[in-house]
Image 1: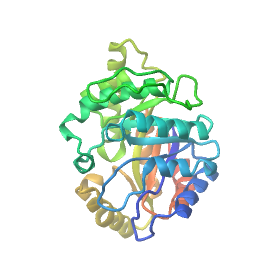
Image 2 (image 1 turned 45 degrees about the vertical axis):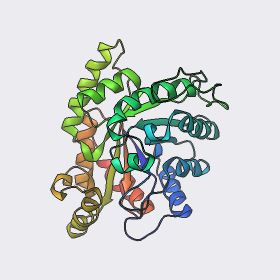
Image 3 (image 1 turned 90 degrees about the vertical axis):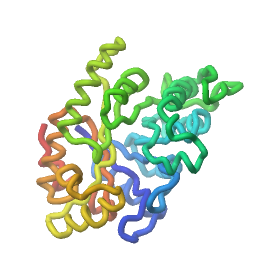
Image 4 (image 1 turned 30 degrees about the vertical axis):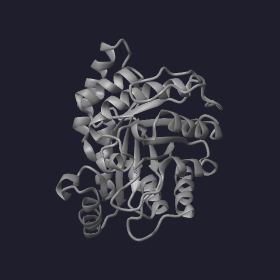
Length: 309
């Protein structure tokens, strides 16, 4: 298992959103030996949200040799041509370090803002992924039900031969994992919408679905995104961060988050990560609830050395 860091796209404790905060987080992750940095996507949210692809592009110079990933980009709403242009630019400017994680998103607010019917998201996603793959490979995609075919191929093209790898986000439903098996180069699960046990079950089901479409499960990559993080040995502080800050923001019952996200003592965080490692998870993306350089330091020095599996 290796580790990535979500960019700080939100303000959690009044710290604001700034270029320095984003860049300081990436520099800390690079210095601590993280493997990747990522951004994800909302147009509207309960709190101000920095645009994900733009933020990711802004830290290319600070990211060293770490991979860059979208976890996920709202492929349905951004559309195949605009999203392909943005992803190709990030890949080119980073010398081929991009993983394009895509999905439909789960918020109807985003769909309403763009006038796209929320109930069409799955059919639209399948079409967008196919067109996106063709565009990123430098081919001319065929027109679909929802999108016309562009008159010419994408230029400039991504650096990677064959185009940018496309990973698909799924919380682990059978339908979602069938989509991953059919259309994706990798699977992105959601930390606060699963558990290590459900991840293991999903990984086994994904293996079956891959074999059903003639693909080999061995070597098919995966990652766990949006692992909310606040490492602290202070039980009261952990409870405040989880129950009073995170749960209301996510509109979740605080009890559902206990033992599911890395909010609490280092040993408990390591136990959660060890269970995921045992379940076959290959990468975890941490989203610190503020104070990103300090949380990166605590993860690297206090948590990761205790992770087994």
